[in-house]
Image (cartoon, rainbow, N blue to C red; front, side, top):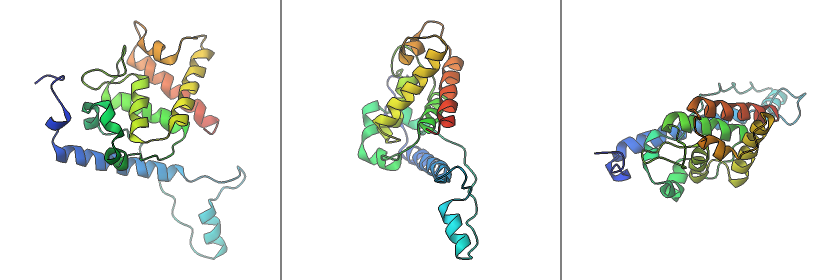
Length: 198
């Protein structure tokens, strides 16, 4: 059996369900940990911690930030249009808002897990280019169109700072481009977005 004949029906349903459940758990933990923010930079405690302190109750324990995880590897075998099905979206992002930095970090992790591709959004085996990895996240419901567009602008800004004017999806497809260069671009953009609080 070659990669072209491999379809969703050949992926064991239990393996897909287990990987989907693991992915949901890891991403929910990550997003929950990212919620620990305050309204003003001088305030170092969350609202819940301030209320608990005022009432004399012990402050809630800090949740350690879990490792960020991309969508499960088994999903790379499914046709892209299937990823937008309500059931898969429910198991994954389901419209969950994420920051631009988180979108870019997840984009890099999708490429690491699914493999990198150039010349098209995806290969027959499911490897993705930058835009293809962003499409996976969007279809599964992580963030919205505005998040994906802002992430694209952030990638474009990093290229512009290097004197490169071509669109990032064309830069991805350039002859001689490497996976390492692509991941470095995405992570540089994610770092810049995080510094700007996006």
